[in-house]
Length: 521
Image 1 (tube, rainbow, N blue to C red):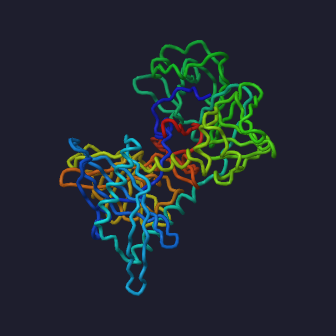
Image 2: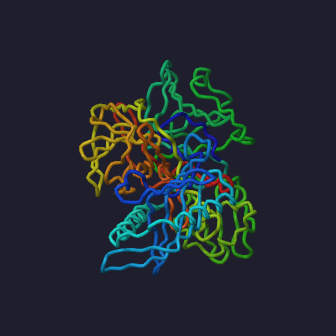
């Protein structure tokens, strides 16, 4: 059960509620503007299309598979919408002249927010017709560089950490309250109370009575220690209730006996059953699933192995006592692909490589979330806990600042910051900050072991004298394509900043993010 109420805290991942499992686009407009012929623009009855510099994905014989970001400004709309298209080309390589000539431009897929299947097919035809007039020749060096960039992207994803967290199995209803290390207290403004700051959950401390209070939907608990044991109470003191925002969501209201509270100070996931596991047939004589849990738990009958799906990753054990080992989605038993779509566990198909649901999830994940930012916007600022403290980023010439909750990077003698997917630039770490139309050189080389890895998924698509079109794909929110499916979080535990203030880092475990195939997020 996931019922604890959440206080506003930077520890809570931005993508927890909306597990937008989207993949990464490595395309930017201005960053590739030095290459002739791109972007390509044409008008149609549907609106104005702009196709940006393609990124090759794979070369098999003489067939080149590529993807490209594009925008469509519909007639009457103030701003364009951005999407992604995939296409194949038959190419001819002349190594003597170092030229690559392309023909048979075939658009295979279009993803754009809010369009119908018929509109997608119409856009495919329009772009293909227009492409017959394009000179798609290039150099061998450009092709090699593009394929190398794709391999670099895949390598960064391959470096995600998939070691299992601590997996706690409870045979009674339970909730998990996570702390990022030992609990830390800080005062609550205009109150004599304190809160535990290194947890996203509502844990309030009353120094006068030496009592901790936990808000869990329509339930309250108290304890003498933030790590428990916790006991249910009818209601908290009025002063405590006043500092915790009320939870009005009917979906989170707990019915029946109050769940047990389990705490953790290390990366942990909870699998809670309402009593002994109850098994139900799922795929013939091959798979069973457990029905009395909110978790996705599957048992394979021939081997008796247990599989649990956590943060988009599969873990296997011989029993619920463990030990657990990671299983890549493309190495699951073939019976997983036979799970009925309309079954209670149809949602797991999006986490099984080779299924239509997984392919759709990855494709839909390519759509960037974009916005138009006025160049004159100067509202962004950064606060530091003391003077800025810089840490080098392994494998790059970049540095990032550790003692702030903003993402500030030093590159080539200037300071960049990424906030809500928008890039800013300044000559000093203290600002003033202005909207940037360039990204730091080397930003795509940041390894996934670095806390600011996510900024490599924030892009600049286009710019005018007054507006910069920016966007991000869900890698910015912690959602990554991985061997045919998508997973949440890098798996790394990044040390938080602890001094006068506490600044958390992105985290993978403890929140049970799930992909919703009906909402594509």
